[in-house]
Every structure is written in C-alpha cells, then in structure tokens.
Amino acid sequence: MFGAQSLTYLVYFMVLASAVLAVEGLYLAYSRRRARRGAVNRRLGLMRDTGDSQNVLEELRKERGLTADGDYTLPWLALNRLFLQSGMRGSFASFIGMFLIAGITLAIIVYMIDRSVLLSLMTGAAVGFALPAMVLVRMRSRRRARFAEQLPDALDIIVRSLRAGHPTPVSLALAGRELPDPIGSEFGIVADELTYGLDLETTMRNLLERVGLDELRLVVVSLAIHGRTGGNLAEILSNLAKVIRERFKLRRKIQAISSEGRWSAISLSLFPFGLFAAINLLAPTYFGDIWDHWIVSPLIFGMLTLMAVGDFIMYRMVNFDF
Image (tube, rainbow, N blue to C red; front, side, top):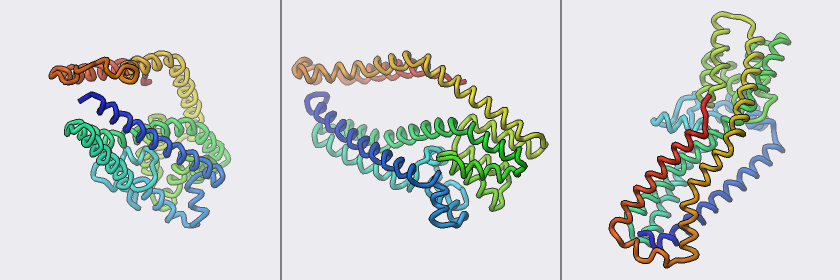
C-alpha cells in the first residue's frame, strides 16, 4: 500500500497542489493590482459603474452567499457563515464544485495507480471536502486580521466626523468611502442598510455576523448602548480605538515572542515526513518488503494519530487567546 506506487501518487498530488497554489497566487496578484488601480474599495467601484446604491447593496450580498434581503442562502448555517466571513466572492456552489471535481479526479487517479479503494476515498474526501474548508478558514483568518488592523483608523474617522457635528449614519458612510477593503465595503453596506430602513443596532449586528471579529463586538455593544441610553459616542469610540490599538500591539508582541516555538513545532511536525521522503528518494530499497506485513498499516495509523495529538498540543502551547 505504501510502496513505489504510493510515492508516485505523492508526486502527482504535490504537482497538483503546486499548480493550484500557483494559479491562486497569480490570481491574487492580478486582483490586487487591479484593485490598486481602481476605486478605493469594491462597493465604490460598483457604485461608479451602476450608480444605484440599492442594486449595489443587493449585488454585494449575493456575491457573499446571501440573498438580496441579507438572509443565508444555504440551510447549513455554519458553512454559509464560514463562506460569508471568508470574503470569498462568487457562487458557493461553483467553489465547492471545483474542489469536488478535483477530488473525484484525483481519487480515480489514485485508484488506477494503487488499486486501493480506501486510499482513493480518503484522497477524494481530503481534496473535495477538507481542502475547501481549510481554504475558507485560512481566508477568514486573513480577512479578520486585515479588518482588525483597519478598525482603529475607521473609528478615528467616525470620531472626527461626529465631533464635526455629523450624525452617526453619515459618519459610518464616511468611513465606508475613505477606507479600502475589507472594512470600506463593510461599512458602506452598513450605511446602505441604514439608508433603506434598518436601525443602527441591527445593521451593526449584521456587520458583526459578516466579519466575526471579537474587537468589532465591542463597537457593536457600544453603539447599541448609546442608542438606548445616549452619551458621548465620540469619546466612547475614541477610547475604543486606543484599546484596540493597544490590543493589536500586544498581539504582535506575543507573536514575536512565540515565533521560535511556532517554528519549532512546524519543524518537528514536518521532520518525519521529510525524512521518509528523503529515504525513499536516496535508498528506494531501504524498507524492503516491510509494507506487505499486516502490522504495518495499524502501526502507521497509530503513529499518525499520536503525531496529530502532539501537533495539537504544540499548537495550543504556542497560540494564545486573550
């Protein structure tokens, strides 16, 4: 099961993964270059093309996996929320279909090479289901980090607008016009929802649902309390901007301090696989006929399970929630 044919399959899989990553890298580079040449954010670009804010609002909702009214389109709320918060644009069905086709194709290739139904099914499931989920989780993490970095600047713009005498909806719309994505379009959606009849608390909760950022929850709660009890909103948001900046600095310090532990954990996790690949390349006959023994598969399964437990423990040791 793990002989020369499996090594050939591993090479095929690495080539496929490299091709996918190369295409994604070229697409991201091209899209970012176009974004820099175009409008400040996507919402303003659509406004420039159409000029109808209601159609733009519906378009922004639809391309993020929502209906025109802002409801989820899929019955699986967790999956729909993950797609929404990842910032992925386009059809969710097309996104999943691309990975499913790749998974089925790769499963057929594995079966033709190794004649193992179990290995082909595992490969198809990993590429068709696990890989798209990992991509969406990664995109969500990057988008949240970018949003958190922009949030203090957005609060500063809102505070300056409030102190100049503008109402809260106008201040939120100003942040949506002045800042790039992801925060620019998100605050622009908030401004459009306020324009078309939703109250401030509902629009801010919708924003929190689209982003899922803990720091944003503080802003939502502050605006909700202010809407019920009143008070100096500019002073509250100014203090929040300072707190979020200090929190961001603390997170960067923690990442710098724990970077050695993270790289050590990555090295320890990859070392066994690298050693196995090196032995097979340098001395293909080193393991001999050991793969045909009945106890090899259970031992490998147990080893991978223990490695997964160890990786999880190391991950928890070098990643901190605060």
